[in-house]
Amino acid sequence: MVPAPRKALRMGGRALRTVSRLPARVSGGCGSGRNNFSPNPGETPVAVLRVQILGCKYLLAKGKDGFSDPFVVVSVLNTRFHTPVIKRDTSPTYLPNTATFEFPLYLSLAHQLGSIELVVWDQDWITKEYLGEAAVHLDSWFRQVSDGVFGFDDPANQPYDVPLVSTRASTPTTGTVQIKLGFVNSPGTLALMEFRDVYNELVRRSWPSLMSAPPTEGIGTLRSYQHGPAYEDDGGISSDDSDNDNDGDQDPTNGEAESDEEGEEDGRLPPLAHFAITTRIHCLHHPRRRRYPPPRIRPRLPTAHTSNL
View 1: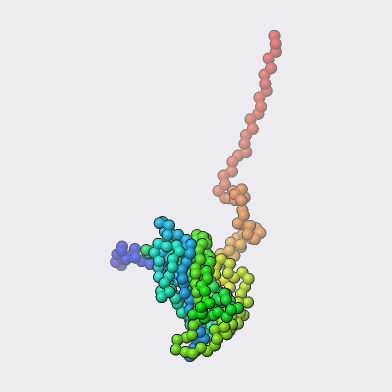
View 2 (view 1 turned 30 degrees about the vertical axis):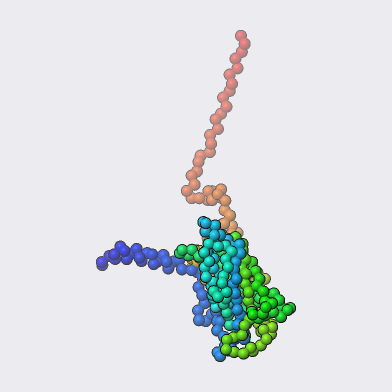
């Protein structure tokens, strides 16, 4: 048998290491209902949500020069856009024609519509670094609900700031994102409903999923939409946009079956007692422990008394 060339062996080793470092989290396949964001066949958007990113303020400086090269990723369900990169700035401003995005809204997907996701990144030469994120939930999209301001082009529709949060221990929380959002009619169609009625209907259809969310949901991370099983990666808000993180380097085959075998061997001990065995107990039961003879006690010699002559 002819041995393989040394270069091929090196390439094969790198390939095996790459396979062993595949992320433990994988997206759902065709049968996964939580990623089914397709509207009903032939359904017309009830409205179009227009989101404009005006800029950011007081972002974290990731560069050695005291600046960052930030850009913002905007996501609604499975539709995602991003702003251009602004060089060397921690309070960037984006032009309207480069940072205004439209998302068609369908009533059949209202139960999955949870929030507008904003993730801010610092663009580097090779990779990108996480700066923070925010989620504008459906029930807080508009700040002038009582005034009936829902249209994007309404003169009374004013932008507002959204504070950033960090779900990564290595990144402190700092900065805000200024956004403006509102409804516009779908291109080439007439208005099917008033914008106020559109918003109320979206909130009404998404309310059961909001109320059924477990109380611990949202601790440590933000979910893109509330509908779905707890503790499950929803594919949103920085789930797919990880930079040099090694969260997926853990071995997914390490389950809980190994602990059962250890418990059988230590049947004389109470549960979990083998995790608290002290060094003294370990030494007493160690088969190779050296047994020293008992210490010898030197007898005390009598003291000689001299008499005065």
